[in-house]
Image (cartoon, rainbow, N blue to C red; front, side):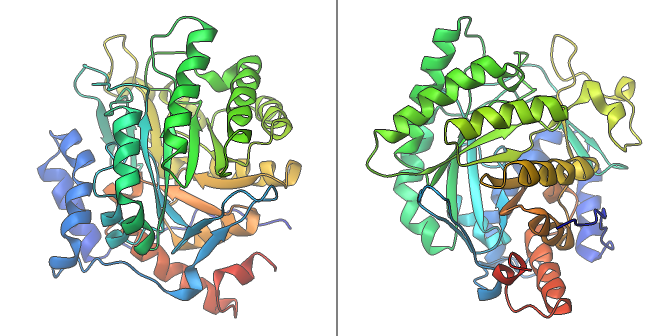
Length: 387
């Protein structure tokens, strides 16, 4: 089925205008704004004008099932908070208050990382409704993060959410053997706690070469990961998180490898390298962006300009590899985009940057999804997949 791609937009309501005012007030504290979502999630039920609480609307419940009978992923809605929002895995269930149906925590590395020491590490592009960052995988380490997830898992499930842990290679490792050992150890630790695991092979924000550009290494890595999974009594889903700037040839080559080794799905994609900003429909120019690392790099872009690319990647993956589960990520800020992506083959979506620009965006997108279902004379989102 061919689905038209429209970059649906939303009207600015009172909450969105208030959010814009907050951004102006704290314009010189980008990381504070970047990090404030956890406080909103925690206190949303008790702040009258926010009105946030978990939503269990039956028509939005989403269950992702897998051909190899991996454990299904159950979401109260097909909207997952992307990795990078909750790096610590603290108070994960709070994000149900914001309307999210699931959360990916991390990205986690084998040990604690302070991240990129340069300041600033984050920039906001108001006109484009986008963010660029080079945080550098700051996190508490996969053992700490996994322990926290394990301790909270019952509460997370009762809130209607599933939780994934995103893991990545520790920057600075020199040999392939070191990198393989590092990622496999992180994967094994995260596997014991999470509902599903993301392998982030595409982070542009650490100064290291991305793993998803080396097909041979991707093959070695996922061979090891999936062999480990075969040895486990419980089969959990494994996703590869890929970069949105892959060419069609690079993407298909990588997908061939993932399918060969039985990887369950892909997340398309990650942040878009700012060096390629000219390929995106943006007002901002690369030379006008702030430097975010000591080496002069300006990190990766996320937000609204990525949507058309996200849609293209989703359609390509499902048309060529229908057995793969797809979670679409990048530029998703409207419920009709969620519906269009599901029609194109996505099982769910991930978002984060929209939280900086739209008031309670997951709740707003839930309402738009329900409006779209009613307009199509559908009772629930599961019917959309059969049309």
